[in-house]
Image (cartoon, rainbow, N blue to C red; front, top):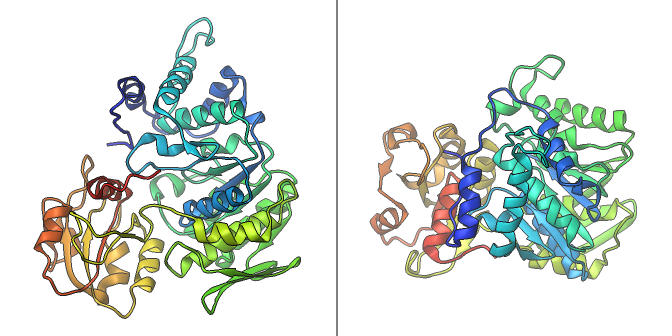
Length: 437
């Protein structure tokens, strides 16, 4: 089942039903369809406010959250598009700081879907775009219409063939942490591409690099770094790399950042986990290595404290779902996310409630967390094919849903982690009454 949504607004639901009917022809790659669709819509991607374009396997969403928070703390109006949504489709399109309203969303999706279908005004051909292509086209139409100071654009999948990659001249590009994920798409056989998996991933992500536009990267294994460097050299794009051109590290209770412009002593990120130092650092480096928008040091500090990113190591407040237990929620589902969770919970015992899509590797989480687990309970991922308990080993228990899994845990004071899928995380947020805003 694909990443569709429902809405209590009938006008929005009619358009979401049209979205749900879309599919991508097997084997179709490239940007031809999204370019044709945007052309029918007047090429809004050429009229966007300055764009901060972010790719990566893990951390790109958090980096976007830091960027948006720092820009807004400086008084800037910011458009943003991120994916996937957790509860409401509206989360994918943030217009000048606010989630798009239902009435406008219905109009916008109708406009884009109508343009994609055949007919005299549309050019006679049904373009058959994908769900994500329609979403990005809708976001760009609205971002070109509503005045703002900046756009923060998160790549959906990969980079080279991602629908967001129609952006022609971003203010700056950023590449977050790299890891193996979405192998079916990003490691598909193709001539003329790297054979080493992590190098191939880097090659795909570095596809967002644009001629002459600066690009910020983290430090990667040699094969991956060479692909990022090669893309930057080919595009004559200035490349700034963590550990060489800039750095960010934890210092006392804060974050220490430095580059060739100088040093910054900043507060610790609001988002928990040691990995958020790196994500906040990437956002800082992106702001400091472009010359289109100025952001004060005070706004950078305020944004680091204010950034929010639901279902990424989010501690849930006490309530009917969680009681008074310490309950953490994370949508992590790949080995890189598992390593991050393992580092965060190292040295303590915890209960894991996991729901994971069938296409993912169960060991991605249970491997890094294995030594910490006091119990492991497997739950369904509503509306999706998911791994049964036996995929997680002989000690895994099962429960019909998250509330039942929580109720069955002993009152031993140990923390609980709910993880394995962003779809599951969205369901938990709904149950907890914590809708992303």
